[in-house]
Image 1 (cartoon, rainbow, N blue to C red):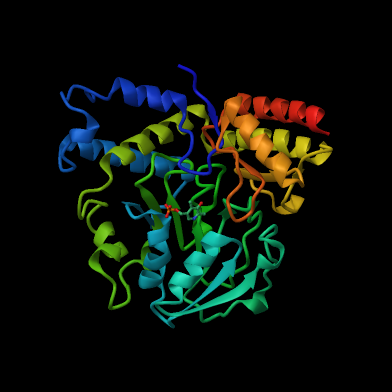
Image 2: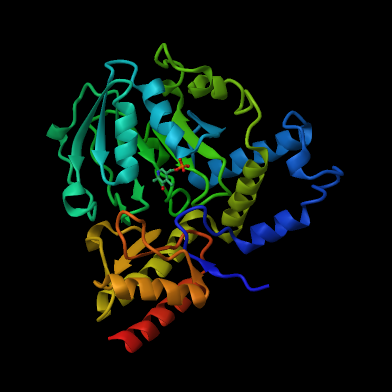
Length: 360
Ligand SMILES: *Cc1c(COP(=O)(O)O)cnc(C)c1O
């Protein structure tokens, strides 16, 4: 068996240790005589799995007691509708900050259900920076303000949160969840598709302050109402059982590693290796302004489409896969999520050095 270094933006690498545990438990989980895949979600064995997943997530993220954790389906994209359905409920208004394609999709969806306003955008420079937000830009009557915390495609991250003047802050944290500590109490709601940093695809994690639950717009479908899921411990209907189980293993892996402070330290080490190389390279360069760089997604280019394509092909042959940039940006992108080992980034940088030597 030869495992590759997978730099995919998502679905992406999982910790090998987690995969090994899942493999060992594939045919029989504990003494149950069955796989987790086959288990009734109403069984006490499964209840213990989902309960410990939630408890571990609460512990590692430091989620306050007045927040509810939901394990849902539909991906982050379903939250683009679910957030306005549930939160655009007082003045029917919300402010959106457009820092990339996902933020834009969220904004467009919200605009279908209420008065969504795009208050700032970095599209003028291909989303290569995070716009500055001043208090006067924010509508004090907005029901919430939405940001995309880490912009997966463009490789930017909010290093400091906007001052929302007391308006609840909602953040899409799909590609940075669990990458470093986060002060949950600063947010009204956080959401993330699991397939970047948590688990296989199929699970969406929502962390929502309790006082934002229970006032959904009249038209809200039952399945898109947070209250439906909050009242039923994420088991109103069948949850994505197996994906929640894997997420639970990943939470345990992070705990064992030393929690999110340690995770951050490792992620900073990996990102620094790559950014330092890019900043000193004569061939490659990063595409994002240094102060807004992501810890998780690192886009870079050579400046020549031909050389970019050559690099992607040769990298793949050498075991560095999915390093091609998003089709809207071109070039390359290395997604270095939690499960990417430091050795993977070291090996990539060595490979880039060699490529530079041969092609300059
Ligand atoms: C991947 C991604 C999405 C889309 O997630 P789905 O689960 O495929 O709907 C949304 N937002 C961000 C920031 C992402 O990285």
